[in-house]
Length: 191
Ligand SMILES: *[C@@H]1O[C@H](CO)[C@@H](O)[C@H](O)[C@H]1NC(C)=O
Ligand SMILES: *[C@@H]1O[C@H](CO)[C@@H](O)[C@H](O)[C@H]1NC(C)=O
Image (tube, rainbow, N blue to C red; front, side):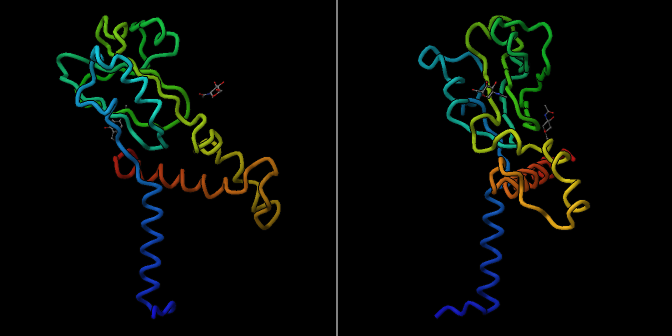
């Protein structure tokens, strides 16, 4: 029989909880397109980046990994308009080290393409809609903290029920998201 009060069982329980937490907070690096090289899509799979972004969900602290020969290609983050028109003149971010990591630190829409002329027109472009329609709704980002946190303890003395519009599990989810973000940042050396 398993003795529920035995130290061994309790240790097991603690380990299980830790593993559960870990599996939720660990961040991942996603190789863009699941390809070994960021490049112009092949004729057999011209929509590879569109398909890939649709089938992946990302969370705070995750990163996109663009791999390519640094002498031959680059990555630019651009605005939605520049993405549509393939305008490479004023990129938000330019990376050309061949091993480019883009870290998700805020919610929104992210548009990437190659910094090399003509490649955007050939569908070497990636649009990620981050935090929209996924399990993590926009209010769970770190920016939601300052609005909700300060008034509770001082005004009421105890933590009151969340506003009726908010789902009841939003606080733990927020905490998991924030902890995940911090852990991810620590692991990747951002803080
Ligand atoms: C989220 O989705 C809605 C509806 O599809 C859209 O109108 C809005 O612009 C999106 N916001 C972001 C940040 O993607
Ligand atoms: C993302 O994080 C990694 C590891 O901390 C860092 O090397 C890289 O420069 C970051 N990327 C951007 C675009 O800031």
